Length: 420
Picture (cartoon, rainbow, N blue to C red):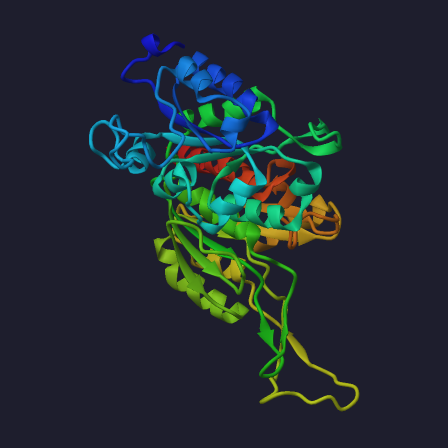
């Protein structure tokens, strides 16, 4: 699509190009998006200009390529300006005009700046100023991709609801082989184009989500807990908010930042979680019990700090089955989705839980698999109802959250058809 073929109805997408060998492939991405009727604008970091010239992108798009916060004035004696031709602050104007921001390729450095809110150039400043959906396609050396800092930064961006198009494995420009190779152009374009098709399909829903692992006190400093990080519940909350739902997130202790646009209620114990959930239940049209609730608590909590003095016996009692209480107390039409962490892919056991609890569906995940489930940003699961089971392969939890909501919407439509 040339600049002459753009129409007023063409969706406007800003492509941010960072400094890496894969920068030249951003030109292919621009062309691919144009062929689908997208009006593409380009922002380049200073490092990106070492790999490909702005002229390439301005020729393809028919638009000025933004390379700095400060535009050069016609009068060389005048100070540089951050205003566009209409007198608007340029990075704010571009942020408001974009219907999506695509950062491709995204370097480890820019991922870190995005995750920590640093804004020292046009691209990162625009990123902080935009409310548009963000698609990120990283490309880097395999060791940089696997570094703990990069993984943590990616997890932060996923929790914000950004779509990460993960790099491929293969031969890298540095001469090494492994993950870090820029994703295929059609995969990146597909994510961008899907944003144009995605509607606010949860806009009529109020979704009550529980997340994290509850803690049951032993004494003043110790507790019974589990390995849940809360990432799955937080991914569900971010996805629901992005798709237009009002989200109430009841969260046990976690180190995760609160998802944008969600009301967060902090709790610690299973009883506190039950109280908070039942209090807000009348507002909910969908309840998702993704929290890892402790199955037992100490019957008599020890006052003060327990001192070491030989063997110790603690008498435990079962905690409440919150899902069962929610099912019994819900209003007509409220969907209840439970989660089941199993040691092994035991669908029969998970379906028995589904029947016993009375939920509309249960999401089962095998927590015995290394690198999945607890304390990981990836997961695989099976979505079970009384009539069917749908397997979700290993994906980032943010992507799994989207697939879970797709199935919940199918349940909603089926329930609606039965009422009619």
